[in-house]
Length: 284
Length: 284
Image (cartoon, rainbow over all chains, first blue to last red; front, side, top):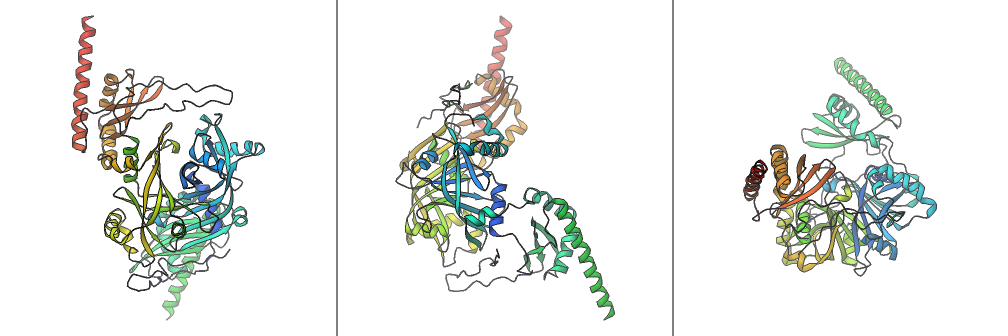
């Protein structure tokens, strides 16, 4: 799935009629990246709590938001909920539901990724419970305390439509097939460690990447902000501000080791590019 | 409003029919505490993001959850949202909405407090915008970047019904009057600092409080977990486990200084009680 990147604020019009001009993009906008479905699956795999929206039984079909813990089982969000809880009463009367999952950290909350999964949420069939239970308890070990309470049951949301918002101006709707066929990023669970390591120990490498593989040649410093199987993202600080940069790996990296190999390969390539530039300049 | 405390897990029945026995409560259960409405207002004042639930226009009246930033203006959650956004399209067609606000931290997510505010969410009247704008920008200074975009408007949720869940077994429904008349706890913005200070520098005081003013006389250590205008809460570790303890102030504390006065007064009282117990024992 090809994703078009929309620069922040593009398309908005100020009250006085001024149109916002998109900022320059300093990298190849067609760089390989995760699809929205892959990003959404990765987000859903990373978080463990969300908001379940159901149709209120008590309050005249008002949409009712409740805090839930969940796990993803075969692409389906599953919940261990009590028959005494409002959302369970709501779902029994009307299975229409959605689950909002959002990334909680970050300075600007609206820049955070979030996904809304819409579909019918129903009690799991007896045949599905054993598998769901195992997945759920692995994600939520403390639920062992109440998984055997008679009033608790496993429910599953049959994801039919998906709204993904990856941040400012990066959003789409997609349907069940894309959700089910997409895979959570295998680097997801390791991303934070890799990013910390790169920013603490390899700040110079990031500057090299930007200088040689993007249009941010005037880069002063750069920090890694994201990494996935297809590549990684940085914030590059230039004299006139900070710009996002995304670069792709030559080969998909599905483990931290493979990511390290790609990052090292790119440093070597960047050094070579710089030294051949140096030679060209010397020959001028 | 009198709040009954239900010990965790009470009322639940295991699959084999065993009834959960409530744990002993080691403090006066009638101790003064915030009402659920006060706790809910405090939570809403403390957070700045939540989930807005609206009725999907695109998807056949499915409840649709979206991530929003909000501020509380005269008891009303207000939002600065774009006409291009799904939730805005939904609200224009059907104003029925709810806002879920939850406390994000804590090891056990289901022990976190959360509140669902139900009501109609509509575009603010022109006369309300100036006040709302001021409140909103104070809470979200970065919104100054887009508050003047032509497609953004202020919406307000007219809170009609409230579902508050303060943790395990502590929950209630209440209505508009209670929400509007309740006040966010004035100690709320200072609670974290006070708690950190007490746990870092006055662990001995907490043990004294538990020993003399609760039934946790066998306390080994205690940490403060919450504080409000009416009193404070601790986790007391005894040989057989950790118990919650709540103690009330003699006088309501609406500033950190007043809280300090109360906490010091209670230490002095506890020391007196201990030394008179010591004398009694010596006279035996």
